[in-house]
Amino acid sequence: EGKGVDKDNKPAKADKEAIKKFCACLTSLADLYVNDAFGTCHRPHSSMVGVNVPLRAAGLLVEKELTYFNTALADPKRPYLAILEFLKTSCLCLWDKGGAKVTDKIKVIESLLDRVDEMIIGGGMCFTFLKVLHNAKIGKSLFDQEGAKIVNDLWKKAESKKVKIILPVDFVCGKEFKDETTIQTFSIKDGIPDDFIGMDIGPESIKLFAEIIAKAKTIMWNGPPGVFEFKNFGKGTTAMCQAMVDATAKGAITIVGGGDSAAAIANLKLEDKVSHVSTGGGASLELLEGKELPGVTYLTTL
Image (cartoon, rainbow, N blue to C red; front, top):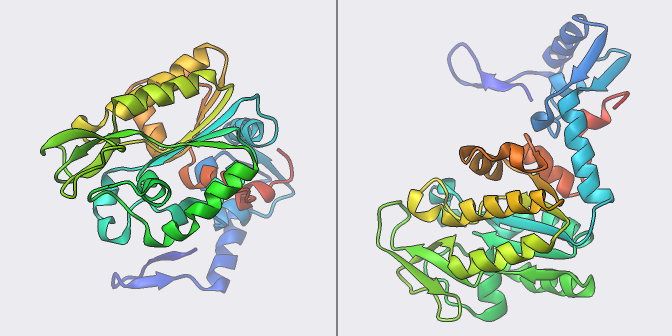
């Protein structure tokens, strides 16, 4: 922590004594500390773990977040469905580095495979699974070379845990990674041509996913299935949001975790139609990985 710039605008980092002094200043401000910033609870910053007062409590938001995540991780109603999808406009700047990588999400996948009954894998990650498991043609879509090495192990773990992994069956594709481009829909059976990029799930995948979501009693959704920031590639994300709303209306516990899926459902003004929309992207992912959050473990009472 303490990263910033000095008076000459050069990168600078506070030393241990400066951090200690800052923590002491924070501590002197009050007798009671309340942490209501769930979105930063995974970061061991001074404001999270440096206010040394006797009583350190969770605020109402943090309490609500932990209640819902505890439901999903410890005591879910079944069938329990996890939806992991990572694909967005920022993948453009990461294109040469792989964008949404399987390796970046392996801990989340492994942790959830110990808990869920079914798992939908979409977004940028699914292309690596499809190519490795089904030798699918994925065109210029995201492919994680390192992640490809662990796909079979993840699949075997899912089989051993009797967890069903569902992958998309068709995609809306563009010739370029932008909104206005040549657009076509391809089934994964026929394959994506070499000059096209998978940028959203197609109509058959939307139908398939909606049917699975409708049967679940607990649903954890993290990440949009397509580049929803582009109008031409947002239908899959809109459909996923609506499926979550419909499941909630039928009594399912629905949790939207992660900044991008939360942003997507907010854009559609549907936040109050699901059980819970998390305010923590990184914090929610670390909880799903099974990690403890420094900002939570530091509290003396929840």
